[in-house]
Image (cartoon, rainbow, N blue to C red; front, side, top):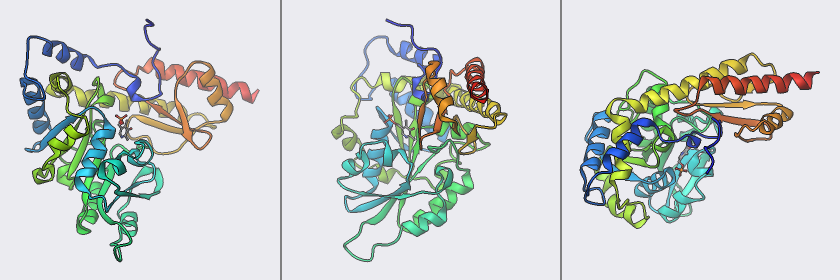
Length: 350
Ligand SMILES: *Cc1c(COP(=O)(O)O)cnc(C)c1O
């Protein structure tokens, strides 16, 4: 077996398991415990999440973000309803139709506002009441925090979006694959960035924060969680040896590691953005507010970085690339990437 790649910027899921999660897994691996969540680790993880969010929410663990998002949205919508989201939303472009499939046919209605951020005005324009039986009824608003372009919503921005949605009879679901990064990026608590702003259901990311696998679905309005346990089971998302999904959450939540890791990843993205700022041919595609840097680069520079062994995605047009930083991204690797890029840009100038 290989010893793994050197640090990369492909995705925050390239990183391994953080030490806190790893130690909790090891600690959970003693003796026998009841399956399907009837164990002490799962109880502790649920308590830790409720403590972090300062509320007695219903919490369900699932294996991944696609399941969390699509099952949460299916819980809010009938097959005849519509889900309003950004055009770049993971639920729209990266889940192979899972929200539509799990909801039995709910329609995704997309909005293409700048920097992957929804605005109340755009939601008002799109979430129109259907005139009759020929069109779907907007029933859920899906907000990604941090967004698919590495920007974040502030509490007041979230509250404005949630108000608009609620006034129209919609519920608000948040794709929080990088929720920790959004919390770490601003002086706001997990509660202020979720239920206090009006979010009804949060899909809280664990994988990209340093867990081996797993996301948590938080229902702040407990009535909305009715029969969700069966929906999770039906979708094949109920872990039999649940303690190995839940224990890592205890590890990262116990002493704030989840936010420390997120803050570190954000700091590495800021370092990268600072380095890019001095390069005339690098143009940021969005403000760098969390752990992702989205930048337009000359095609030859992208090719040169790839040839140097760097792994990252170029998926925004032909020359828009994404560099993601993780809990274990080192300043040294950021500087090495910047050095290689500087060299690539200089060599073409000659
Ligand atoms: C990674 C990611 C998810 C989760 O994806 P899975 O691969 O299904 O775990 C969800 N939303 C966003 C914005 C993501 O980046």
